[in-house]
Image 1: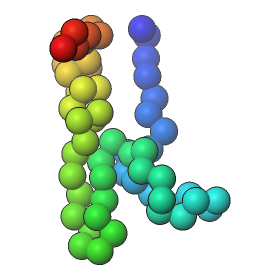
Image 2: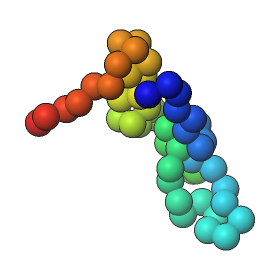
Image 3: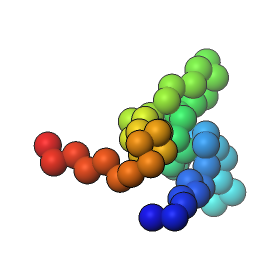
Image 4: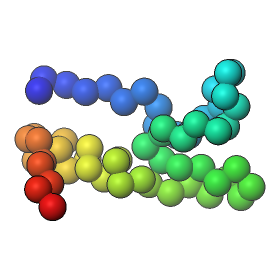
Amino acid sequence: MRGYLHWSTFDNFEWNSGYSMQFGLIGVDRSTQERKVKESARYLGRIAQMNALVLDRG
């Protein structure tokens, strides 16, 4: 893999779906504005740090 671009860092507003879709790397609690890093962000971070794909075989 030469590169990867994730669509959105934060869960954000989508014109067709409002805030119902949550696909950002960092989740946002809309009532408190608290941010929480998702496991997907940690996974992509490990790939970047190791400069290799990390396969979790469970």
